[in-house]
Image (tube, rainbow, N blue to C red; front, side):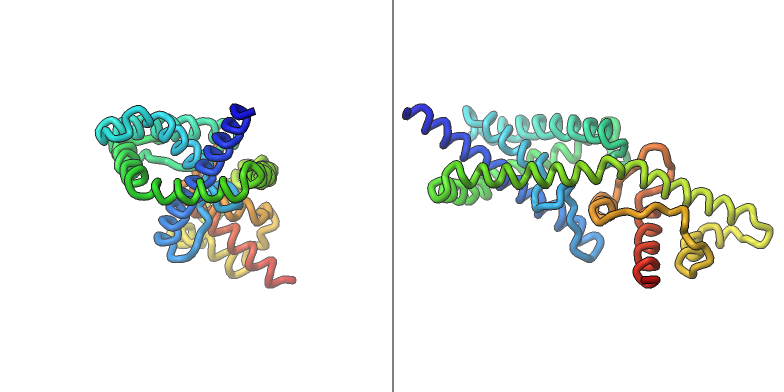
Length: 266
Protein backbone atom coordinates (compact mmCIF):
# COMPACT_ATOMS: atom_id res chain seq x y z
CA UNK A 1 0.00 0.00 0.00
CA UNK A 2 2.85 2.36 0.87
CA UNK A 3 4.39 1.68 -2.54
CA UNK A 4 1.18 2.61 -4.31
CA UNK A 5 0.90 5.83 -2.34
CA UNK A 6 4.49 6.70 -3.18
CA UNK A 7 3.91 5.92 -6.85
CA UNK A 8 0.78 8.07 -6.85
CA UNK A 9 2.63 10.94 -5.17
CA UNK A 10 5.53 10.78 -7.62
CA UNK A 11 3.11 10.72 -10.56
CA UNK A 12 1.36 13.80 -9.19
CA UNK A 13 4.64 15.66 -8.68
CA UNK A 14 5.93 15.02 -12.19
CA UNK A 15 2.59 15.91 -13.81
CA UNK A 16 2.57 19.19 -11.89
CA UNK A 17 6.17 19.87 -12.91
CA UNK A 18 5.18 19.29 -16.53
CA UNK A 19 2.36 21.82 -16.40
CA UNK A 20 4.38 24.32 -14.35
CA UNK A 21 7.15 24.45 -16.95
CA UNK A 22 4.72 24.27 -19.85
CA UNK A 23 3.21 27.44 -18.36
CA UNK A 24 6.60 29.09 -17.79
CA UNK A 25 7.53 28.32 -21.41
CA UNK A 26 4.23 29.75 -22.62
CA UNK A 27 4.90 32.98 -20.69
CA UNK A 28 8.38 33.21 -22.19
CA UNK A 29 7.38 32.52 -25.81
CA UNK A 30 4.22 34.62 -25.75
CA UNK A 31 6.00 37.48 -24.00
CA UNK A 32 8.81 37.45 -26.58
CA UNK A 33 6.44 37.44 -29.55
CA UNK A 34 4.19 40.04 -27.92
CA UNK A 35 7.10 42.44 -27.42
CA UNK A 36 8.10 42.04 -31.07
CA UNK A 37 4.53 42.62 -32.27
CA UNK A 38 3.79 45.27 -29.62
CA UNK A 39 0.55 43.54 -28.69
CA UNK A 40 -0.30 40.49 -26.63
CA UNK A 41 -0.04 37.29 -28.66
CA UNK A 42 -0.65 33.71 -27.56
CA UNK A 43 2.40 32.03 -29.07
CA UNK A 44 1.45 28.51 -28.02
CA UNK A 45 0.21 25.74 -30.25
CA UNK A 46 -2.64 25.07 -27.81
CA UNK A 47 -5.34 27.52 -26.81
CA UNK A 48 -4.55 27.30 -23.11
CA UNK A 49 -1.49 28.76 -21.35
CA UNK A 50 0.85 25.84 -21.94
CA UNK A 51 3.55 24.85 -24.43
CA UNK A 52 4.04 21.09 -23.97
CA UNK A 53 7.56 20.96 -25.44
CA UNK A 54 8.80 23.07 -22.52
CA UNK A 55 7.10 20.77 -20.03
CA UNK A 56 8.53 17.62 -21.62
CA UNK A 57 11.98 19.17 -21.94
CA UNK A 58 12.19 20.28 -18.32
CA UNK A 59 10.94 17.07 -16.72
CA UNK A 60 13.37 15.13 -18.94
CA UNK A 61 16.23 17.40 -17.86
CA UNK A 62 15.26 17.35 -14.17
CA UNK A 63 15.15 13.56 -14.20
CA UNK A 64 18.44 13.23 -16.11
CA UNK A 65 20.55 15.65 -14.05
CA UNK A 66 19.65 14.28 -10.63
CA UNK A 67 22.93 12.33 -10.23
CA UNK A 68 25.06 15.42 -11.01
CA UNK A 69 22.81 18.42 -10.40
CA UNK A 70 25.60 20.27 -8.53
CA UNK A 71 28.00 19.97 -11.46
CA UNK A 72 27.14 23.07 -13.47
CA UNK A 73 29.17 22.10 -16.54
CA UNK A 74 27.53 18.67 -16.72
CA UNK A 75 24.08 20.23 -16.24
CA UNK A 76 24.78 22.77 -18.99
CA UNK A 77 25.82 20.25 -21.63
CA UNK A 78 23.26 17.59 -20.68
CA UNK A 79 20.38 20.06 -20.79
CA UNK A 80 21.52 21.71 -24.03
CA UNK A 81 21.82 18.33 -25.78
CA UNK A 82 18.52 16.93 -24.45
CA UNK A 83 16.46 20.02 -25.27
CA UNK A 84 18.02 20.25 -28.73
CA UNK A 85 17.05 16.64 -29.46
CA UNK A 86 13.50 17.21 -28.19
CA UNK A 87 13.18 20.42 -30.21
CA UNK A 88 14.39 18.72 -33.41
CA UNK A 89 12.05 15.73 -33.04
CA UNK A 90 9.10 18.00 -32.16
CA UNK A 91 9.73 20.20 -35.20
CA UNK A 92 9.96 17.17 -37.48
CA UNK A 93 6.81 15.51 -36.10
CA UNK A 94 4.76 18.70 -36.32
CA UNK A 95 5.85 19.22 -39.91
CA UNK A 96 5.01 15.63 -40.85
CA UNK A 97 1.55 15.68 -39.25
CA UNK A 98 0.49 19.27 -39.97
CA UNK A 99 2.32 19.99 -43.26
CA UNK A 100 3.93 23.20 -42.03
CA UNK A 101 7.22 24.32 -40.52
CA UNK A 102 6.24 26.03 -37.26
CA UNK A 103 9.61 27.59 -36.46
CA UNK A 104 12.66 28.04 -38.64
CA UNK A 105 16.28 28.69 -37.68
CA UNK A 106 17.56 28.68 -41.27
CA UNK A 107 18.92 32.21 -40.87
CA UNK A 108 20.69 31.36 -37.60
CA UNK A 109 24.34 30.30 -38.01
CA UNK A 110 25.26 26.65 -37.48
CA UNK A 111 21.70 25.36 -37.84
CA UNK A 112 20.65 21.82 -38.68
CA UNK A 113 17.87 21.71 -41.31
CA UNK A 114 16.49 24.91 -39.82
CA UNK A 115 15.05 22.94 -36.90
CA UNK A 116 17.78 23.53 -34.34
CA UNK A 117 20.85 25.77 -34.21
CA UNK A 118 23.99 25.81 -32.08
CA UNK A 119 23.48 29.37 -30.71
CA UNK A 120 19.92 28.44 -29.70
CA UNK A 121 21.14 25.23 -28.05
CA UNK A 122 23.78 27.23 -26.16
CA UNK A 123 21.03 29.56 -24.98
CA UNK A 124 18.94 26.61 -23.76
CA UNK A 125 21.91 25.39 -21.71
CA UNK A 126 22.26 28.75 -19.99
CA UNK A 127 18.50 29.01 -19.56
CA UNK A 128 18.29 25.64 -17.82
CA UNK A 129 21.09 26.62 -15.43
CA UNK A 130 19.11 29.70 -14.46
CA UNK A 131 15.94 27.64 -14.09
CA UNK A 132 17.59 24.90 -12.01
CA UNK A 133 19.35 27.30 -9.66
CA UNK A 134 16.88 30.18 -9.45
CA UNK A 135 13.40 29.27 -10.71
CA UNK A 136 13.12 25.58 -9.86
CA UNK A 137 13.29 26.03 -6.06
CA UNK A 138 10.27 28.35 -6.31
CA UNK A 139 8.42 26.05 -8.71
CA UNK A 140 9.23 23.06 -6.50
CA UNK A 141 7.72 24.70 -3.43
CA UNK A 142 4.57 25.59 -5.36
CA UNK A 143 4.29 22.06 -6.81
CA UNK A 144 4.77 20.39 -3.42
CA UNK A 145 2.15 22.69 -1.92
CA UNK A 146 -0.37 21.90 -4.67
CA UNK A 147 0.37 18.17 -4.42
CA UNK A 148 -0.28 18.26 -0.67
CA UNK A 149 -3.40 20.37 -1.11
CA UNK A 150 -5.10 18.60 -4.02
CA UNK A 151 -3.21 15.32 -4.42
CA UNK A 152 -3.65 13.31 -7.58
CA UNK A 153 -7.05 14.92 -8.21
CA UNK A 154 -5.37 18.18 -9.26
CA UNK A 155 -3.03 16.35 -11.64
CA UNK A 156 -5.94 14.46 -13.23
CA UNK A 157 -7.96 17.66 -13.72
CA UNK A 158 -5.02 19.31 -15.47
CA UNK A 159 -4.51 16.25 -17.70
CA UNK A 160 -8.20 16.22 -18.67
CA UNK A 161 -8.14 19.93 -19.54
CA UNK A 162 -4.93 19.41 -21.51
CA UNK A 163 -6.43 16.49 -23.44
CA UNK A 164 -9.54 18.52 -24.28
CA UNK A 165 -7.46 21.50 -25.44
CA UNK A 166 -5.19 19.27 -27.52
CA UNK A 167 -8.14 17.52 -29.17
CA UNK A 168 -9.92 20.80 -29.91
CA UNK A 169 -6.77 22.35 -31.39
CA UNK A 170 -5.99 19.23 -33.41
CA UNK A 171 -9.46 19.22 -34.94
CA UNK A 172 -8.88 22.77 -36.20
CA UNK A 173 -5.28 22.29 -37.29
CA UNK A 174 -6.02 19.31 -39.54
CA UNK A 175 -7.61 21.70 -42.07
CA UNK A 176 -5.17 24.52 -41.33
CA UNK A 177 -2.50 23.54 -43.85
CA UNK A 178 -4.94 23.18 -46.75
CA UNK A 179 -6.69 26.48 -45.96
CA UNK A 180 -3.49 28.50 -45.63
CA UNK A 181 -2.11 26.96 -48.83
CA UNK A 182 -5.27 28.06 -50.68
CA UNK A 183 -4.84 31.58 -49.34
CA UNK A 184 -1.20 31.52 -50.47
CA UNK A 185 -2.32 30.44 -53.95
CA UNK A 186 -4.87 33.27 -54.07
CA UNK A 187 -2.16 35.79 -53.17
CA UNK A 188 0.24 34.50 -55.83
CA UNK A 189 -2.54 34.56 -58.44
CA UNK A 190 -3.39 38.16 -57.51
CA UNK A 191 0.24 39.24 -57.79
CA UNK A 192 0.52 37.55 -61.18
CA UNK A 193 -2.70 39.19 -62.34
CA UNK A 194 -1.43 42.64 -61.38
CA UNK A 195 1.91 42.02 -63.09
CA UNK A 196 0.19 41.01 -66.33
CA UNK A 197 -2.24 43.93 -66.47
CA UNK A 198 -1.16 46.55 -69.02
CA UNK A 199 -1.88 49.43 -66.62
CA UNK A 200 -0.18 47.81 -63.67
CA UNK A 201 3.15 48.95 -62.34
CA UNK A 202 5.69 46.99 -60.35
CA UNK A 203 4.66 48.98 -57.29
CA UNK A 204 0.98 48.07 -57.68
CA UNK A 205 1.90 44.40 -57.81
CA UNK A 206 3.74 44.83 -54.53
CA UNK A 207 0.67 46.49 -53.02
CA UNK A 208 -1.63 43.60 -53.91
CA UNK A 209 -3.29 43.78 -50.48
CA UNK A 210 -4.80 47.18 -51.32
CA UNK A 211 -7.10 45.53 -53.88
CA UNK A 212 -8.72 43.67 -50.97
CA UNK A 213 -8.63 46.59 -48.53
CA UNK A 214 -10.43 48.89 -50.96
CA UNK A 215 -12.92 46.28 -52.12
CA UNK A 216 -11.64 46.10 -55.69
CA UNK A 217 -11.50 42.33 -55.19
CA UNK A 218 -14.43 40.66 -53.45
CA UNK A 219 -12.19 37.99 -51.98
CA UNK A 220 -14.65 35.23 -52.84
CA UNK A 221 -11.79 32.77 -53.35
CA UNK A 222 -10.23 33.47 -49.95
CA UNK A 223 -11.09 30.67 -47.46
CA UNK A 224 -12.45 31.63 -44.07
CA UNK A 225 -10.19 30.86 -41.15
CA UNK A 226 -11.65 30.24 -37.71
CA UNK A 227 -10.34 31.73 -34.46
CA UNK A 228 -7.88 28.92 -33.75
CA UNK A 229 -6.41 29.01 -37.27
CA UNK A 230 -5.99 32.80 -37.19
CA UNK A 231 -4.42 32.57 -33.73
CA UNK A 232 -1.85 30.08 -34.99
CA UNK A 233 -0.93 32.39 -37.86
CA UNK A 234 -0.37 35.26 -35.45
CA UNK A 235 1.40 33.09 -32.89
CA UNK A 236 3.96 31.59 -35.30
CA UNK A 237 5.36 34.51 -37.34
CA UNK A 238 8.04 32.30 -38.97
CA UNK A 239 5.56 29.64 -40.07
CA UNK A 240 6.20 28.06 -43.48
CA UNK A 241 3.24 26.32 -45.10
CA UNK A 242 3.96 23.41 -47.44
CA UNK A 243 2.92 23.83 -51.06
CA UNK A 244 3.20 27.61 -51.26
CA UNK A 245 6.03 30.15 -51.34
CA UNK A 246 3.82 32.83 -49.82
CA UNK A 247 5.01 33.98 -46.41
CA UNK A 248 2.95 33.54 -43.26
CA UNK A 249 2.94 37.33 -42.83
CA UNK A 250 1.19 37.83 -46.19
CA UNK A 251 -1.29 35.03 -45.49
CA UNK A 252 -2.02 36.56 -42.08
CA UNK A 253 -2.46 40.03 -43.56
CA UNK A 254 -5.03 38.86 -46.12
CA UNK A 255 -6.89 36.74 -43.55
CA UNK A 256 -7.11 39.77 -41.23
CA UNK A 257 -8.33 42.07 -44.00
CA UNK A 258 -11.03 39.63 -45.06
CA UNK A 259 -12.12 39.16 -41.45
CA UNK A 260 -12.54 42.92 -41.00
CA UNK A 261 -14.41 43.24 -44.32
CA UNK A 262 -16.80 40.40 -43.50
CA UNK A 263 -17.42 41.94 -40.10
CA UNK A 264 -18.21 45.33 -41.67
CA UNK A 265 -20.56 43.73 -44.22
CA UNK A 266 -22.74 42.20 -41.50
